[in-house]
Image (cartoon, rainbow, N blue to C red):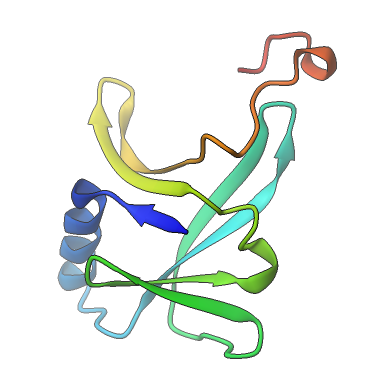
Length: 109
């Protein structure tokens, strides 16, 4: 379902350890749609709803998502990048849709 790269897992574990957050999950969610496809978000979460959430264990991390977002996050990959444009966590999903040039004129992607 959701893959976490080794780099992202190591960085997230380090961040959780620095902040002394032991019982926290990484919540991933579909934040909306744009002409470039699905937009994603992430947050640290300490409250999980058994009724509404799906919980996954990946590389020693707890990943939680709303059950309604599960299809939109299918085949998503969470990575941590550190390059000339900055550093941070990113969610990439090759099946999340691409740029719809008919609606954005080709300039948004």
